[in-house]
Length: 581
Image (cartoon, rainbow, N blue to C red; front, side, top):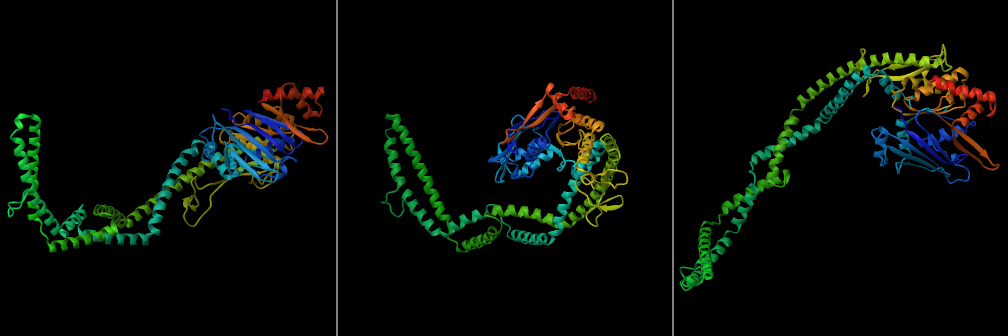
């Protein structure tokens, strides 16, 4: 599969550029032109898109701002796409638009997917999208973390298996250690919490509250407190309904209703409608009789008992003490007591839990030590194969005496480590290994980190060799090489071009070059041209195809586009590149 990330860059008012569009394609794109023009066009612009440092001097004199826009095709599941969407960006059919605006006053703004974002976000996206290998700027595999990740992918299943087990054990150790840390560092707080819970539970247990008891007692207290008024009201109501035996002349509701019932009952047979009313009056009479009887019983049973009232109020006060501390109602208090008992049991079992967690931590550390040793062994074996492959590549890139190695080491620690190889060492989520790529540029030179062991041109070639060996293992889908061919020529330049073409089989490759031997291998050839009308210098970009490409290669070879000898050599280069891919 060929990755296609960077489709085009539109550049306006940058340096000597008024307006230019750089269209890129999958595979290998070579950018050539007059000295410095190609680099300004591609490297500087792409650097701005990747969150690089902005300099107001880059804005064309007389322009208000410089704008660089990029159109990228990304997988919606990729880390870059996910991070962009988290920042509010929108992807349209897998296309992500990014831009960087630099004002003449030095202010810088960034936009991703139609949303204004911090410039730092561009740098975060760049980590997963583009690897830059230039004369003064290197990204990607120069970072030890990326070197370890790439080595692990290069090693394949030999590392993937133990790494997956290690990651699971590491996460479990992290969780267990956090719980153990809480138990041990908060022992005093937890003891105080247990004492408070124990006191509260004892207080609730002593009161022995029943569900709904507070509501029942409130109703009873209300009734007992107004017993006399209730009894008087019931007596008056009973008299009004059933009459007073001591007042035979009094009129009551039952007597009146009975009279009404007798009156209509006597003639009900003459009209069914009146018969229905008679029945309803009879029902009223029965209901009045029942209510009168209930009122009599209510008044007889109602007793103003000051002793009972005092007992009820005392019980309510005891329950109020509970609801003030543990819940709005007695039901809430009982729920708190249930939860508190469970929490107290948990707190009382802390000592046992601490012992269990300590034992599990020890077991996990032992397991991690064994898995970390397996990772070290697998990485060491893969690093040896990798170093031999890169060293062989460098021999064909005009660095015959250079040698690449991997330094895989661990850092010893006195505390909080795991035992690997009989030593306590620092460990992390990916093992205990510190992985670093080293370069010895010539015999007798000590191996040094690749960023420090080579010149700018050599470093680009080293990174090319590394990327070729790592092809398919490193997740970055686009590579930019700035003058990777510096300091080489002839056969070595041809080998550089061949390896760039090989890398382009699994990634998008953009190369700024001054060598026709390299440009001949490209799938797409872009030329940056300068024009000058005597007062203003402008730059533009043009895709070279067919006869135009032959003329450009001729210019690069001999400085003469129309030289028959140069043209013949250019055609020979193109044919050899097509045959030697």
